[in-house]
Length: 122
Length: 111
Image (cartoon, rainbow over all chains, first blue to last red; front, side, top):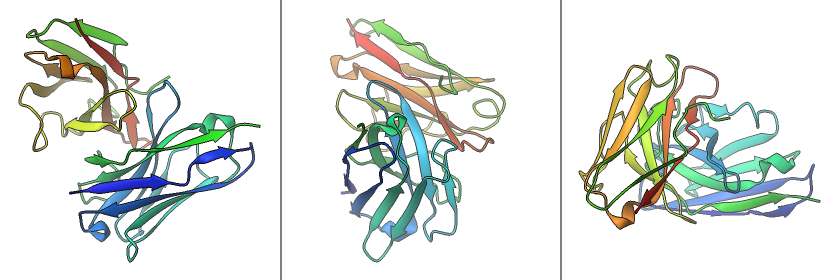
């Protein structure tokens, strides 16, 4: 059974940093591109970042470019999101999601974690 | 403002059919057959219901179907059931630097 479990969320002050993690199991993690998608409270979904299976291709939404860094450790079956210079508008539930297409750019997401809440507030 | 436009809400009675529209541009919905649909119940993670415009993942009921015409994609749910009540989001590949765009979501109410 495919499982994605996020952790690392919490309350952080504006300008602060946070590192999210996503532990994957039930599939060959190193074969899939992975993504972060966020959802602000009461709002819709927003794609944040994508990383290819071997970390060769990395993409970011314009809203986080230069502040967030996506990475992965295939030996540990883990995905990460380092978030710096956090702003109030980054407040959201952050989901880890798998892209099954095997392409370098993100297309769609077939499995999602339960999400971890990041709150940016003073 | 979301890149793809969906109605804020739709409703239907049990057993009826409903359709949710998702309008984009030639840079996303109209230009590629890479539209997907997600179902999200309150407090839960999104679930993939349709990918590549009209394909259903294994385990998704055949009451869910997808289509596309021009810059507008549609999700149709037939034989509405109480458990279909949820938020639905469309998504599309885009040639822009956004890479993936979502609609604002549609709340489906089963009367």
